[in-house]
Amino acid sequence: MTIDLSSAPFLSHAPSRYFQPVPELAGCVRVVVGRNTVGWDLDENARLNYLPALLTCCLTWVVEGALQIKTKGYRRAMSRMAFTGPQTLPAITANVGQVHLMGVMIYPDAFHRMTGIYPGDLVNRTVPMQEILPKDWMDWAHAVMLSPTDEQRYECITEFLVKRWTSCKDPRIKIGPSFQDWINRLEKTVGNGRGQRQAERLVKRLTGQNMRGLQGVARAEQAFFYAFQGLLRGELSWREVALQSGFADQPHLCRETKRFCGFSPDEIKNGMLNDEAFWIYRLWASAF
Image (cartoon, rainbow, N blue to C red; front, side):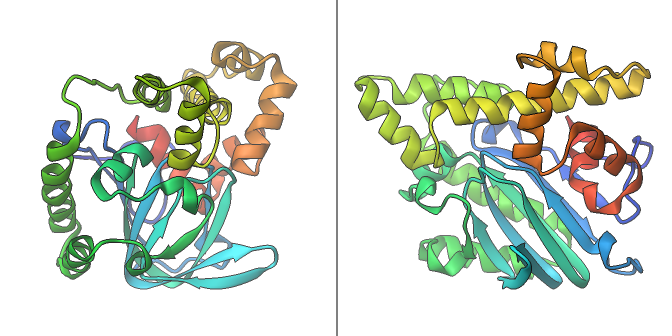
């Protein structure tokens, strides 16, 4: 199932798509996204992609064109099939001309269950898929790349992951749609039969950070959704957003937003309204 964003507020100029994960992938896949700027004449700034810190792993296929990762004043090429570990910091990528890409965000504990790989060992890193994925996963990754349409890529992603997730998930554990729901699940799972220090080490190996850090990202996401709802109602108050989301006050919200997103709350709001490079924020707000 895909969500039609043609009538959504803050629509990007170039097409961006959110694919709803099937129920069988609850607790495994957070979201599947597509982005296609082929045929769109975007200037250099509009070809940037501003990405917030993320708790998930991400598998990205650059079907057409090329991406670069901007790091401390220089750019390095990103593999056309790339794995990105959990991100504790915001990131910026740049489209080299026109691009068509697809990505799937997978919760790190689910990725570990399916592959045996600890995503925390790859925190804040983006590497070619072939450097870490098992052979059967790479065979699948190539099949996704060779699929002729986004819909068929989505079907290929879904079919593969459903088989692997179904065989290793705990059917007793349910999970809601937010990062906070997932954190609650993770805390319960790692604490089952383990001492506190052992559980903390496992969380770090799975996610690259401690539980407090995870809670900070989840709180920032909740603030984003509260702010978006207030913006739609025409009564956005950063003070109210801060209190609703569990921040001490508005300055605390601003500091944490800057840390996780690289921008102040007002800069994100203005970017969503006016800047193509904030497309992921518009897509996120419209899809959840």
